[in-house]
Length: 454
Image: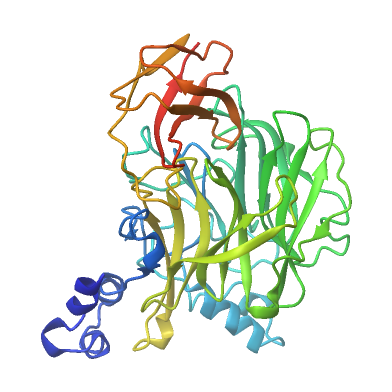
């Protein structure tokens, strides 16, 4: 990280002075982006790799980033514009005609891709509209990069949509049991769909008091978890207290989303010590964690009482904003990789001032090597893909326990004191991606990802 900081000296010229010499907006943003860095907390430098800007980053505004549990699908809210300046403009000019606010063209970037978004259709007769929609990307392997955005099959002209979240099927990760999204200011759900939903017309609004009958913007960034492969769903989301303050809420459905219990405010994490947003849940070999951003850095807290969703403690800083304006929106794949967004401030060009890009950091020790340095040899799990049973090779110890965890963080099999050459049955497991976790008596852990195809 020190090398990154030193590289910013750029032969004695400041970044702002270089920007001031540029006039082409693409060159300006490239200068800003190429010289922006974030910092992994020293406690996690042996676990998280170097954060980097994802190859599919654009010159538009990519926010509300979400990666699927299996790590193969990526979603974002998108606008081909300087969205923060647009929001500020609207807030500062409440008396302007509608076509000079939501139809304003001064913040739309002519050099930004629209990916086929409809920037003209609207209910107000304006020549154009600041449309926000959801983009989608897919990769075939978690070791590959996301290369290209496409306009999602959820896109609707003149409809603001964001906050995408897929709850993948435990039987087939290519299918999605429930897909959540927001817009405008309410949470909607599509049932029984695919990774890029094409049946948005079937979406239903979640009921009060999750959503407000008045329809004002009060909820955002939902996340959904299925509890113990049952019909019990846990919903966690943001609720706006006012324009600058948010609470984290959680609510249960005991009938697979047909009805919902009254939401409860999380009291073990609150906005008294700083702005919080974008809650995410992640379970690995060491426990369940709540990931989130506070004051535009990325943190996490561990669940202190299992299955108590208001028992978070021991706040840990994961990634700080470095010289960026802000970072946030963490979302976590089952292998522990983190997708997040980074906000830039182009201080020399106030007419084109803010941008947000998708970034990524890989968990270089696997999803379960959280607290301790890994000294286990490289393990081999075979066959992979598996269809009946697996074996584990390259073991130097006979006192290894084995845990198999599905993509929702649930332990689906456990073998204590695994013996060399023994087989572990996976015939009962649904098709999908799993982490095989080896655990030594010293609690050191190592994992490898496998596919089960029965």
